[in-house]
Structure formats: C-alpha cells, structure tokens
Length: 417
Image 1 (cartoon, rainbow, N blue to C red):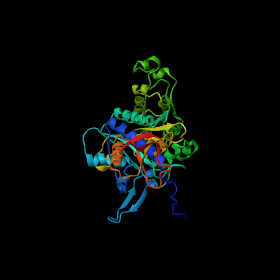
Image 2 (spheres, helix red, strand yellow; image 1 turned 120 degrees about the vertical axis):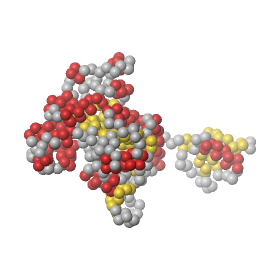
Image 3 (cartoon, rainbow, N blue to C red; image 1 turned 90 degrees about the vertical axis):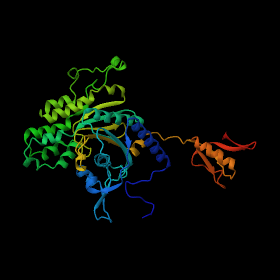
Image 4 (spheres, rainbow, N blue to C red; image 1 turned 135 degrees about the horizontal axis):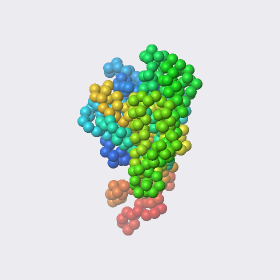
C-alpha cells in the first residue's frame, strides 16, 4: 500500500478549501461573539465515561477508544463536543445564571455518518446554559438560521421536532411491555419512516400507544401559511399579528393534536413547537421555511426537549442540528437547563463558490534594509507580500500577484503588474 494513502473517509484539506473553511470559521465565531458567546476549546481526548455521558448507543459506536498508558483507563477521541462543553459549564465555570459558550474543532468518527461523509468533521456550535424558558430555544434557532445565512446557502428549511414525544408514548405501557421494544431500533425505524417495521416492533405495546407511535412518521410538513411570519403589509410595518391557526389549513401540529393522546407531556411538546413557530422574529428571516417532522429523531440521544434540523437545497442530509438537553449536566454534578446547535464547517464551506485568490504584491529578494522596512509596513497594513526566492522569479507564486515592488529613484514603490 502506498505510504501516502490515508484511511477511508479521511482527507487532507488543500489550500483553496482550507482558506474557505478558515474564512467561514472566523465569520461565524465573530457572529457568535456579537451575540455574547464566549469561545472554549475542549480537549480532543478524555475519559470515555465523561465523553459519552447521556449520549446513547449511536455516539458510543462512533467513538474511537484506546487505553491510557498512564492510568490504564479507557479514553475516547471526541465524536461530538456538546457534552464536553456541558462539562465545562457545569464543573469548571460553575457560574450562576445564563452562560453562552461557542466552540470550533475537529471531531473523529469511527464510522462515517453517510456514504460521502468525512470521519473527521470540523464541528462548530453554540450553547446556552441556565435558562429553561422558550426564549433560549428561540435564540438558539435564530442563531442557527443566522449562521446559515452567513454561509450564503440561500433558502433554509428548519424541521422542528420534540424529544419528549416518544418517551411519553412509551410510558403509556407497562414496564414488561416496554422491555420488549428495543429503543435504538425504534428510533431508527422512526427516522426511516418504516411503518411495516414499526408495526412489527411495536406489537407488544398497548393498542393506543402503538397506533400513536405508528402515526408519527406521517406527521410532517410545512407549517400553516402565515404562522411565524407576519404577512403582506403587516410584515413591512413590523406588526406582530399572525393569522389565526383555525383560519388556515390544518398543519402537522394540528393533525398531531387530533391523533396523539392528550397527555400533558405531548400537549406541552406541541406547545413548545407552536410557540417557536409563532414568534414575530421570523418576519425578519424571509429565507427560512419552518416545518415540523415529528419522527425526525436523528440527533444524539441526550436531547430532552425541542429539536431542530436545518436543510438546504442540494443536500439530502441536515447541515446543522440542535436542541434542548437539560439532563446532561447532572452527571457532572450540576443539572443545568441547556440548549444549542452544531454544524459541520467543512461541508458548509463546500457549498460556497470558490473564493477568488486575494491580490498580492511580488517583492524581489534583497538584503536592502529599506526594502525590508517597506515590506514590513505593507504587511502590517494587511497587504500580502510574497518574496520571490532567488532563481524562482518567473514562477507562478502562491497568490495572484497583481502588483510588484520596484525601486525607482532610490525608493521602493508598488506598481501594477
């Protein structure tokens, strides 16, 4: 095997792509800073029991594991950064009140998430701790939409779901009946909307619970026209009024109320989604389409409330995911309300048009102190100055040199090439 070959689903990042990724990273972290988010940098590796706290079987399978030669304990290479940031908030910062944190770094997957997915995604995200109300969920979803807008992806569809629905429906059954249903298989079948498979898996459950779970795959679609967005002249005037839900065709949330049992947990979950949809902020985000998919459960299993997945044209899979995960901090000694999202920076950078090479200044190689001073001044002013090494003057340089430094009348000056 050639020594230059890399493992499957692992790839180098070459200059043009690296430049696009880095520019996008800076743009998004600056956006988060403008919202008041502080940057943290968790370690790439830590003890496996800390890394996988509350994350479920799916993340465990995607985690590279190894033995620490110093302690003999099992370590994991992080497959996701959310639980790490929750640990920082709960155990290290130990602040009271609201904390906003953001992060960016590589994660490593033992198995790729898709046929063409990288096993080394570059994950960027933002988290809010300390507020259990819908305002934090709304800020999280708005920041996700603003992030995708900053990436220049055009139209965005946000699919809303709620992690409390399935547990509430399962809780209608006896413990003995629930133990006969593998929850990992249940979540997989719901994600794939595999009704025949679901019907077979759910056979041990009570009829009302079984029929409600079988209804979830069909409960999806764009939310009723006008909801979450002022219409016509009202939107231009900044009005906060919305058409009444009963005046519009029933959307999937209305259908969900009709077919799902009227349990308090289910009513509260549907209220959470409706409250977010009816926010007046969506009048400012005309490129965002809001929809619901009550079987879209592809997020990690630490989610405990409202969840959201973002889709863009030309990509079958979600480009960003997020949601509420109030229970993760408990394992680190302090239960904290929490919500957040993450996105894969390399994938989003690939959706943008290739950036043009920035213009640069070509400078000759010389020991002239005056030339060195001029080069330093130009670089300090933000210009790119490329020194042509001796014997390589006619070669193509790394950047598009559209100007050059020349000596004229005893002084160095920039002129167009």
